[in-house]
Image 1: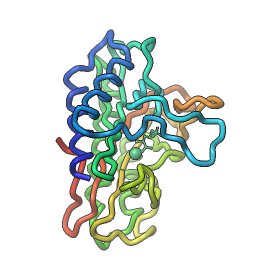
Image 2: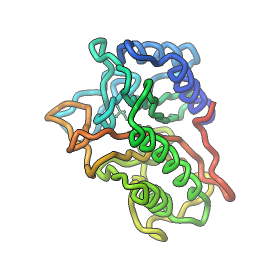
Image 3: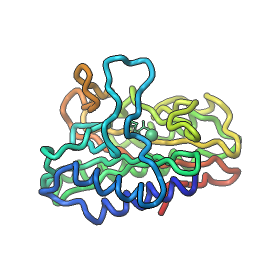
Image 4: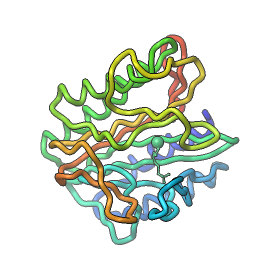
Length: 246
Ligand code: MF3
Ligand code: CO
């Protein structure tokens, strides 16, 4: 998991250096796929087929690139051009040596309003606070409650119908890791459990990300911007070990 996690982290670092206004989101996807394959990995999302939803086609790309009101699963396109003032959430997964790594970051393009900048900062902090709870002996929803409390106390809205997940030889494993919940509930966390923790937090009041029939991309209900940060972590005794750091 360290190997796949490192690849994902390097991809997101590279995107941080390269992303700018005027770029098509598909350019980022090409860079990411090349990097993953050059380092002996396979993109985790490419051709991913969700179980149980016959309307959705296999995911066609390496990255999810979701701009502003797009919460997650934006499909890269040569027609989608990044603009000054956008916030761009990039989610990347890679598979190597039998295991997946999964991580996301939201990038700010040029000048954005102060409340949007704050949304991005608070969402990153939500992830940090969630990770801080991912220690052996705690319960799963201690993570969820920490994320929710930080988002709400800053006046932001938690997207509730999209969740983090267990991760390992499959991209999505049990348990689901919601971004809201009650402390002291959920399964006991044990050392060695691997989780993808991924707060999706919105400006405004939307508590759901919705997609039009068959489309992958999911947007806020009120069209307000949303941010997303994700790490793949391993539960340890004192503090979680983050797999998706460069
Ligand atoms: N990080 C997201 C997730 O964990 C990305 C999934 S995209 C998909 O669910 F194509 F793989 F579905
Ligand atoms: Co994930």
